[in-house]
Image 1 (cartoon, rainbow, N blue to C red):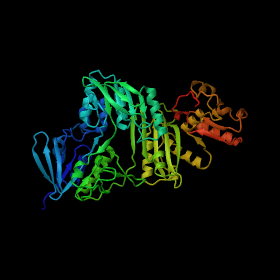
Image 2: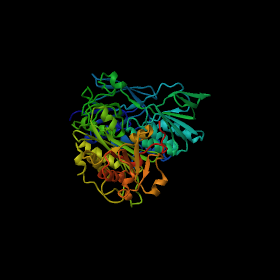
Image 3: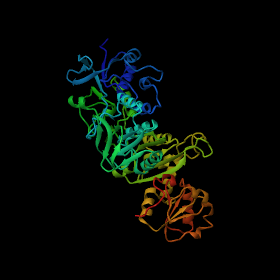
Image 4: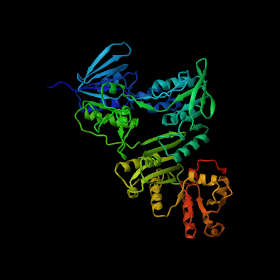
Length: 568
């Protein structure tokens, strides 16, 4: 009987414990060790904003199993037969001797861990922007449970009335949501010109930003914090480049993370073009006996084939399973990622998968897109909610490239459908043949994602000629000689409408009888809340001989601007 296999895992948050647990199931006799520099292991980092918001009352829930067992040394030892060393930092890797040198951060004791296979799951570290005053009391990050506990303690004092969030990425936006739920006034400062710049196209982002503004959040895009000021060592205000002084008692920086590759780099392992550890499809590094997974590695985008850095919990867990297979003799692979992500922000659900429109165009794709507003369930079901879906398709190959969605209804299932379709190489025509489930509590007979595919098909056939909300806004502000035909009823029109002298209201039901009221020889844009009646109206006008007719894509529900048009 040979010696037992020795597997050492560096990192005990998500990918590392997953790899170790999978390795244990694949090899019941292996000696498996996890080294974690922190006190807490296998915690749910994605749950930290929900703890801050008060939605999760018991902090321990973030590091317990679904059946209430804390994921500590006892859990890993008794249930997994894995030796967990907390507060133990790996300081170097001797690849020739195949030994990890570590130090106990509590006692200073030096330890050696020999390995046959080594797993690096060193994660990522938050980027700390070089802002004057960043060290003042009251400035936080949100990357670790300790950060959440500190923020929660500060909030519990009742002294935090206004907080500034630096960065409008996912962490920043979810943190803003959490603070808002604690009745804290929130200002978000984002260097780029939109919220969620790495996730959403500008049109979908504008819809989210408008919603947050209407809910009471202040958002400064295209701006940056130049310094943080304080009194007696505590934060009192933030100074931005464009908007000046913002009085506050708390600042949270959320400007992204960087892969933690120090140990790998010092060991001579290859670092990829993204700055993360380079791995092959088996998650092997440049040393075949060393694997890496989670937020410290780079991935391959499934559509473009390019290397990308995407630190997400879904990938960490997927990586961990593959690594657990392969360190015990398996040949599992990670084929690539689509950057699929979803979130709930200010009670608005958002999601994306694949390439966005801007991203695809920057990569050289010729794209055709569609935005539809629809209900996530049948209109007569009392739980129905509004959603907007954007579908992105390669205009030449008709391959589906991506989708984005926003709304208070169920957008996640639609994003997951598109992610599945892209993963299987689906083209536009394939969307119509996906056999999706239907019942009034769950969906509509023709699902909104099929509706988006239908709009693209109609565009290709010349039946649907559209204009986006941004394009229409620019035309109106320029003073273009156009007609804006609102085809809602008079009662609906009175409640809320674009205020401009170029607007004409004729209900769709009256349009055929009153078509002579519309001047010919002008560009006509038809509008309604969802876009469906506007589409019908555009076809009526085209049939009546009007040549330059478009309808507002996604309807007024995609209008993220003031209703009063101010001409430039």
